[in-house]
Amino acid sequence: MTDQTNHSDTDHDDEDRKRDPNGEDQQSDTDQQDESDESDDDKKPSVFQKPLFWIILVIVVGALIIGGVFYWLHARQFESTDDAFVDTHIVRLAPQVAGTLVQVADIDNRHVEAGRLLAVIKASGRDAQVAEAQANEQQSRAQFAQAQAQVTAAEAQRQQAAAQARVPMAAAVKAQQDLARYEALLRLDPSAVAGQQLDQARATARQTAADAAQAREQIDTATAQITVARRQVGAAKSVIDAKRALVDQANVSISDLRLTAPVAGQVVNRSVNIGSYVAPGTQLMAIVPDTMWVTANFKETQLTLMKIGQPVDIKVDAYPGIEFKGHVDSIQRGAGQAFALLPPQNATGNYVKVVQRVPVRIVFDVKNGPDPKRYPIGPGMSVVPTVKVR
Image 1: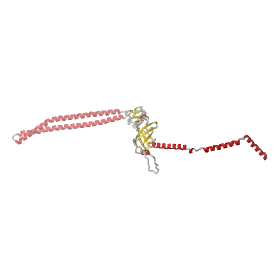
Image 2 (image 1 turned 30 degrees about the horizontal axis):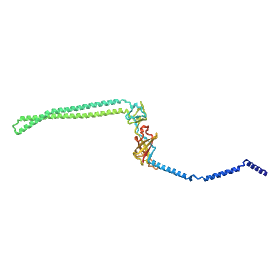
Image 3 (image 1 turned 120 degrees about the horizontal axis):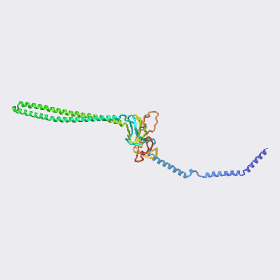
Image 4 (image 1 turned 45 degrees about the vertical axis):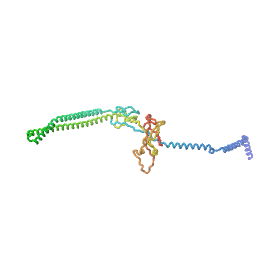
């Protein structure tokens, strides 16, 4: 049984040799080829052993270092922030009186000049108030003219009284002189002057003196009348001023019915139309002035070398291909959080230091760059300013 088994195995081996007579030769050739490849790999030098690799590596590293140094030297000359936006003082128009709008200019998103009529409120009897105030002013002016005429009349009466007083005053002087001569003769020679003649001279002197005193009183009375008339003129002028104030007040009330543009700019955010009822303080529309600037909130650590007047490159996000020019106009004295409605209270045990932001005002330079008025740039638009600090 064993012999038969061995015999069968021998027969199978013979068959395998018959089927693949070159099997052993192929295996040996493959082994020789692998050994040859391994010997070739051992003979090739490594990349790190080549001088050219190290030369290129040194050049690349040196170029990177030099480029980094130049970039740092260039970048340290500038301070930039993306926490910046276009800013201006928006003018919001609101009436001072209540009423219905009878006229509203159709100028949404359009530019207007200062003084342009924008809206009109219905008068509702204010024209009559102006007319009444003007009539009262005219009446006071007539009273003023009458007072001035009284002054002229009083001055004329004084002149007339002064003219009429010349005769009694001259007679009083002459009678006094005659009396003085008679008394002088009487002292020299008592028989030179009769007693009746001396008594007549004395009586005449007293009469003429009384007439002169009466004439002076008339002059004084006329002078007092002039003073009274002049005071009446002053009172009438005061009345004119009071009536004029009422006219101005009425005109102001009329002017309050007409809303005009206080500044030149673009009309935005109109919320009313003809027929709308408005109350005092109701916002009708707003005007964006032509004068705009950039408010940039720089970190407080970026302000070390920043000064007023330094040039600024301004890039508006809406126009990335245009570079506007400007300069630092002012730096706010204090961080923004100090002016908040509820300033932070840092006197606590869990305080964490945070770098604060300080608003910096940057003004556009039209002479050195594009004019922002030629582009639809408005408040709130994002910009990226770059300030040259070195």
